[in-house]
Length: 71
Image 1 (cartoon, rainbow, N blue to C red):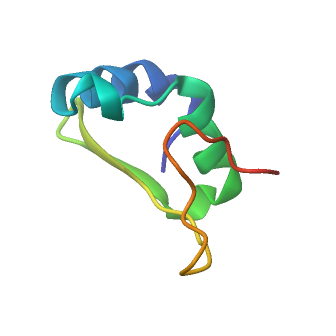
Image 2: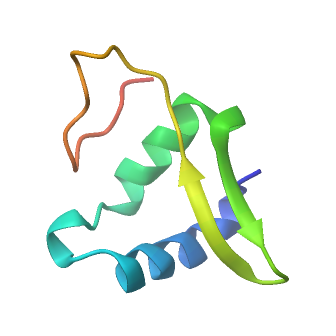
């Protein structure tokens, strides 16, 4: 389960793995987490090694990059 303390590591991982055009702000990523915390996970081995931010959406309404999800 992702905790508040994990966000610096998550930010480092996304910056190491994605091109600049796919980097999302911490506020956007945290909005995904707040929307569905039970499906947002971090892998630790023993340090953070990966993460997944999964949230529900309608098939025809995929949120764009850099868009915060509502409440």
